Image 1: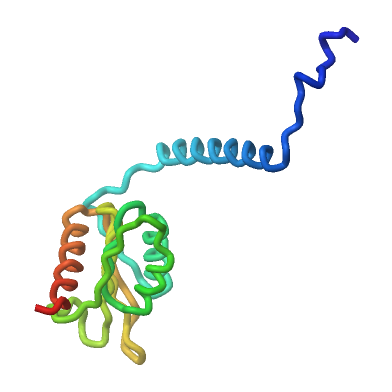
Image 2: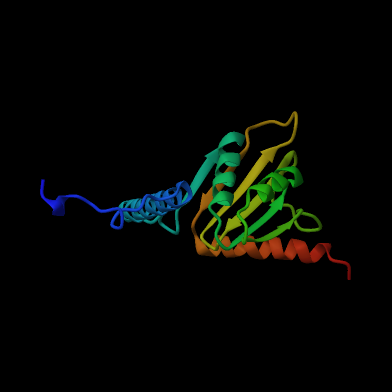
Length: 167
């Protein structure tokens, strides 16, 4: 063997476990970020005018949780307090949360239904109607990326919050 093939102790220094884990995490985060960027290029942007119908309470709750977990800047929600509590606990740190019950405003759900509104980052929104206990029918709603509808929901939540403030 040639002496140039051997490493001297000055050229090789083992990493501590903490340093090794930090390096491994950075490398993993870099690869994950690259994968996320590549995948986002593959998926087409949703058509902003599209409205997607939702059927069933499980589907609605699941989408609300996904929208909440993916929030980066803001969340607007109004309606069922216990469900809003759960979503508030799921919301990421640093996200501005605007929340209010739907009170003292024109009804947006039929008798026997409870409305729930959610808007995220000015990019996505959901309007849902949950069925009261013993009521007829299934929970249903719509999900959209239409900026006009999103803006309307944000405004409705702000209006509902103003109605609750003492005058």
